[in-house]
Length: 326
Image (tube, rainbow, N blue to C red; front, side, top):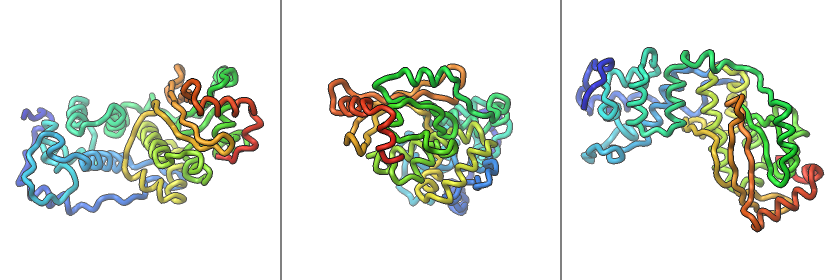
């Protein structure tokens, strides 16, 4: 396999020696690198752990490499195996996995992303971690404001729960049916209108979301994407620190370094007033702010879930005061 010219330094030594060196490294523990006081995330540590965890999930047979059945001292691919797939030297890849992404080219990152079989979201996250200065101006931290006309749009949507979510999983606006379905967010302090805090710190969320573990995993994956884009956001790092202290489940999920974009799918809910609901959802980015997304839930026509939404809509905003807060 050809070696990238810029990475053509040292070829691998004995694979067993490399495995010994890798196995001597103690993996980072679950607590993240951000504290409750909002210290910026350690960019080098984030890049290192992201690459290490992506490499650990692949086995030689997954990528067409021979597996000789020898005892492997590290989970997943060895560094020299990943370097071989990416067409870079072991020394070059090792420096990158140690968090030294300075001067790495886009071509090399693309090659590593292909070798690691990264999703589009993971590839974008890798670029943000390896080349943060390239996004510094574009990704400067700013206050989140939802345009008033977006709230007018939300208020005009009938029969469909809808809300706008921003960075850090902050809930910026919603309609009456969303309040009836998820809880009376207007009763919460603005800082608590946040899906991550609701999901991990409010016990009622576990009753509402039948597949709570998946909801929790999704939320953490979204926060990871935000952290790659905004590593110096003090509110984000403060949120991560708070949840790390208060929730062992959050710490465990944060340590996986999984990332994903908000998308579409099905959520199953257990509402105290109308019972179980299976609702599809779609996520649409707002045109003037790529950090804000409109999320809408809908039911299959003539289904029990559709009947449940109609019942909730008939109660309107008053239903939120009856429904347990989530």
